[in-house]
Length: 413
Image (cartoon, rainbow, N blue to C red; front, side, top):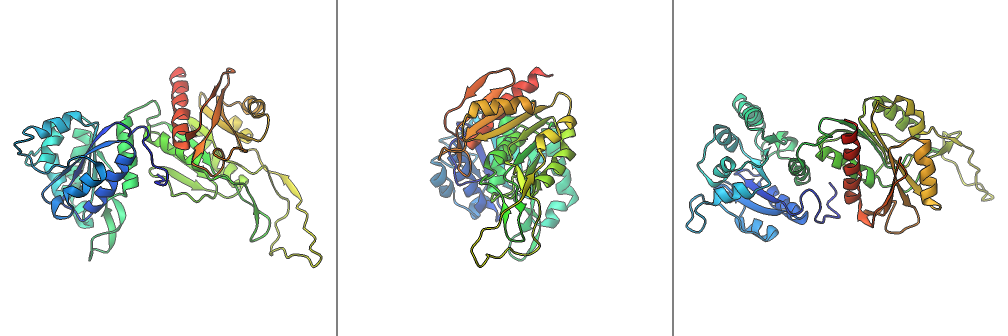
């Protein structure tokens, strides 16, 4: 998730998150996690174990959430705090979760505020392990985690591979990054959907067509729209393959990312997956043309300053060339970026490429289209309906697009 444009958004906005923090060196990351959740519009109640308080202060969480943090099970002011926290939570996330906490949770212990809150809640629970590699791979820890998953339906997110505590070098056991945990919390808040376990194909970004070893023909697509759609589909439970041209975006969490450069490479990747995809969203800006001949050496400026003439040829049409391979009853969504006659050109593309609906927008608006965080689009449907959306973040546009995909899936069941 890009954190450069965080604002209250679905599915975090207006939701109650109990953030449990246990005694691990990774506890410092939980402060950043609390800040991100709050920025996304969630109300965050931090619950710290006594071990966690040795690493971070409850005051740190109050400073980034604007809400009180809790550590004590027995309190005159809040005698049944674990009950209210558990009942009011939309999700409980424990990050970091130590081996000791995982053991106690798997046994149903209730010897501190965090474990009693777990017993009192019926909200989804996300556990984010953080510990030494040997502790994580120990059979008892694995048995405890399996019990949480199989018998309590907890979600276990991570751990990742990376630098561990000082002296432990590099290995498995590192807590996921706050941006990754955000997506796990979002997925838990969304819950099961018609996309759960469905296969989704998304294309994104530009393609690059080489002229010589240092130059290429491309466009200004940032890939943001396609990445946002892929991440929204992941939160809805889909298995997502994102095929992307060269972009300057972090790899999305939980998604199979296939990196390509040329239109021909994208065609090969799409051809491989489209027959399996229940939903295909073509958000990439594929170059229509490529140079006929690629120079093996850098083209030098001529002494007379005469510009070289590029001899271009048509690239494959990724959508049309794979149209016959699409899965029966699958949903197919296209994009059209235009500079004139936007709706007319988009309608022609919708019909010619047999999309279920198409997302059209203008390349001439400064606050929409390429390389910005926002977009203003119109949705054209196969039945002739047109829905024009106001200026929105690309995250919010992706949510609208996915809501229409869910409607189409429901009608095809």
